[in-house]
Image (cartoon, rainbow, N blue to C red; front, side, top):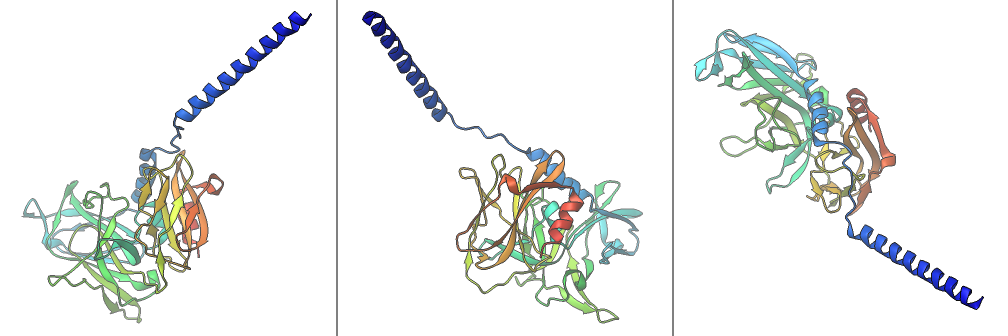
Length: 344
């Protein structure tokens, strides 16, 4: 009987040792392998949903190249185009030409088209701009580009962005490849560059009064592509840099993070830096006022719809904001724009 117990004890001991070895090897293998995080949205799908939003905002017109044409947009902006200054391959244009216009005044449309209001400072850093209107304009004939040898002048109702601001200047939008002449060019997330005259001074947006006393910005545009009427946001409070963590499966190729400032409906800041090692987005220029009330907005794509998350925050020094899966919802383009425009 004792011999039987000895055999059973040895067998049990061997089983325990074997189980422990298996557990140890299993844990070691798990720890030795990097955790793979599945991508939640493809970069192509995210790019497409932004492109679709931009295309939905294109207004199309025709005018005769033999005369000065006046185009009035859906929001009441009037473009004056000198047809006799149009050329194609160095020759004067005759006949009809096609005009494309996009106008963005509210942060909702700026967000869905990825056209934030971030301007380049003299030192190369970026800071928030307050916009009097973002505009895209292009002219073609038979699908071929047309050159404009005279300024195109936009007359913009200032009431569209809260009334006249005497400090507005003119800006041009530069994309990743500095090619923003066409509506299909890769111009996502670009930075606005202030226009200057021959002396290097900023090109001011002149203010003009209408017959009823209403104010207008008069903006001469020398080039096709994206142009903006802006000024830098000003706040005397100390500044900081903030960080935003997003859910796993998202990065700077399939998502974006923006800041909407309370009380500034015609401005949208962009967190343009992403650290792949930490999964953190950042505005790394240190331009966010401490104590500022704002909304952190995360955007991506899910099954053809917009995926978004919004958090209301008051900026603290060195703050990190976390967007979690619990914060995410889906919406159509119009639903998301209405939601963003409705923020305080």
